[in-house]
Length: 171
Image (cartoon, rainbow, N blue to C red):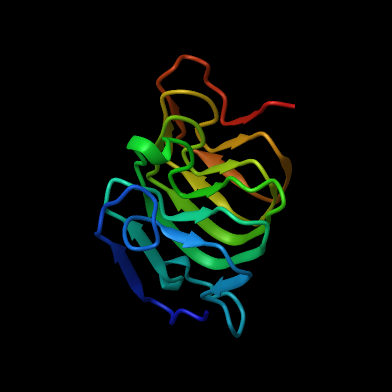
């Protein structure tokens, strides 16, 4: 899926996790990119996906390969029966393989993992976690799976639990 430069997608339908409402459920292999011909120099031109719905943005629930490239992912505040982890991206399948490349995850509010909550395999490259907040563990990333981070940053993270860790791993 190629999103055009400068595009804004706002998720407004709330829900408890089904495909009919709430977050964007990923159950099949997919590449979502705003960088079909390379990454724009101006990050403001990366497509923006906003969760304004009391849920997270992406929910990877199956053992599939997923690539998120050249995107801005903003907001997310998951609550209720679907759990509170992972405001930007939640990976619940141990068999999932997720690549996050040139993605800015910001403004997420979660129990654990303000940007990403991972129980699968996640590789993060050249990405930025900005102003994410948690009441539990990992203001940027909560990890109980396999995690690789390269050339990425965490800025202005907030952890109201008093633990003060940007990246939390259970292993």
